[in-house]
Length: 79
Image (tube, rainbow, N blue to C red):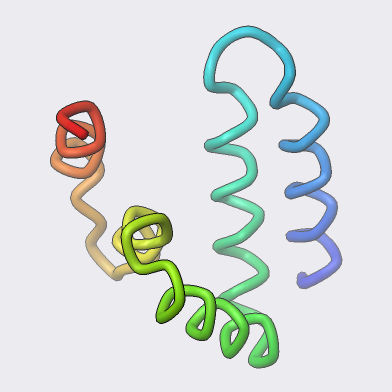
Protein backbone atom coordinates (compact mmCIF):
# COMPACT_ATOMS: atom_id res chain seq x y z
CA UNK A 1 0.00 0.00 0.00
CA UNK A 2 2.92 2.33 0.60
CA UNK A 3 4.06 1.87 -2.99
CA UNK A 4 0.52 2.52 -4.20
CA UNK A 5 0.47 5.75 -2.18
CA UNK A 6 3.80 6.82 -3.65
CA UNK A 7 2.50 6.09 -7.16
CA UNK A 8 -0.57 8.23 -6.47
CA UNK A 9 1.65 11.06 -5.21
CA UNK A 10 3.73 10.87 -8.40
CA UNK A 11 0.55 10.91 -10.48
CA UNK A 12 -0.57 14.02 -8.61
CA UNK A 13 2.77 15.71 -9.30
CA UNK A 14 2.36 14.93 -13.00
CA UNK A 15 -1.20 16.32 -13.00
CA UNK A 16 -0.27 19.46 -11.01
CA UNK A 17 0.89 21.62 -13.98
CA UNK A 18 -2.51 21.25 -15.65
CA UNK A 19 -5.00 24.09 -15.10
CA UNK A 20 -7.11 23.80 -11.98
CA UNK A 21 -6.41 22.25 -8.60
CA UNK A 22 -6.41 18.67 -9.93
CA UNK A 23 -3.00 17.65 -8.62
CA UNK A 24 -3.34 18.82 -5.03
CA UNK A 25 -6.22 16.51 -3.98
CA UNK A 26 -4.51 13.56 -5.66
CA UNK A 27 -1.27 14.28 -3.80
CA UNK A 28 -3.17 14.54 -0.50
CA UNK A 29 -4.89 11.17 -1.08
CA UNK A 30 -1.54 9.54 -1.84
CA UNK A 31 -0.02 11.15 1.24
CA UNK A 32 -2.88 9.86 3.37
CA UNK A 33 -2.30 6.30 2.12
CA UNK A 34 1.43 6.50 2.76
CA UNK A 35 1.02 7.99 6.25
CA UNK A 36 -1.53 5.37 7.26
CA UNK A 37 0.78 2.51 6.27
CA UNK A 38 4.33 3.68 6.97
CA UNK A 39 5.65 4.39 10.47
CA UNK A 40 8.82 6.01 9.13
CA UNK A 41 6.87 8.38 6.86
CA UNK A 42 4.56 9.27 9.75
CA UNK A 43 7.56 10.14 11.92
CA UNK A 44 9.00 12.39 9.19
CA UNK A 45 5.62 14.05 8.72
CA UNK A 46 5.44 14.84 12.45
CA UNK A 47 8.94 16.37 12.31
CA UNK A 48 7.96 18.50 9.31
CA UNK A 49 4.73 19.53 11.04
CA UNK A 50 6.68 20.71 14.08
CA UNK A 51 9.02 22.72 11.83
CA UNK A 52 6.26 24.19 9.61
CA UNK A 53 2.92 23.99 11.47
CA UNK A 54 1.05 26.57 9.37
CA UNK A 55 1.84 24.86 6.08
CA UNK A 56 0.98 21.31 7.14
CA UNK A 57 -1.97 21.87 9.48
CA UNK A 58 -4.57 21.58 6.66
CA UNK A 59 -3.19 18.19 5.67
CA UNK A 60 -3.14 17.11 9.30
CA UNK A 61 -6.78 18.15 9.65
CA UNK A 62 -7.69 16.04 6.62
CA UNK A 63 -6.06 13.00 8.21
CA UNK A 64 -8.41 13.02 11.22
CA UNK A 65 -11.16 10.44 11.59
CA UNK A 66 -13.97 12.90 10.80
CA UNK A 67 -12.37 15.58 8.63
CA UNK A 68 -14.30 18.82 8.36
CA UNK A 69 -13.67 19.26 4.65
CA UNK A 70 -16.04 22.19 4.07
CA UNK A 71 -14.75 24.13 7.07
CA UNK A 72 -11.16 23.43 6.06
CA UNK A 73 -11.61 24.74 2.51
CA UNK A 74 -13.49 27.78 3.82
CA UNK A 75 -10.66 28.64 6.22
CA UNK A 76 -8.06 28.14 3.48
CA UNK A 77 -9.90 30.57 1.19
CA UNK A 78 -9.87 33.17 3.98
CA UNK A 79 -6.06 32.98 4.21
